Image 1 (cartoon, rainbow, N blue to C red):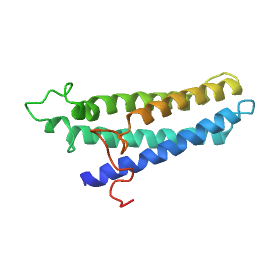
Image 2 (cartoon, one colour):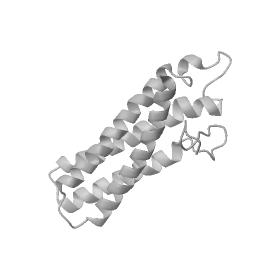
Image 3 (cartoon, rainbow, N blue to C red):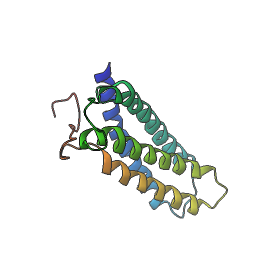
Length: 154
């Protein structure tokens, strides 16, 4: 079950990245257009995917192979780059990114002009994208690398 959760968590990263790019492009290109129901739905799908991924990640940090319970007794988490990345840097940055995604989705409810909604949502989603790209364990990252598609031979 744990492997399945990890694979789902990894798969959803691609869904989130795709939805972030689509949302960012949509909001920047529609800066002077009305904020539509389609804009709201795109933001909602992004937020749902992000929150599901967060829950899966929190489950892994709590009870997975790379969790607080599995840190060796003689290891200081903050001094060990592997444990620090997976137990501190990755979760904190992803929570911050998901907060930004949630705020970007919430812009639709504000009583401001449509142009301001598009601008604020685009900025918040762009910052979230940068944060996510910075702390994903990409295959080229030394010490914390993960495959692009875990469980697949790509």
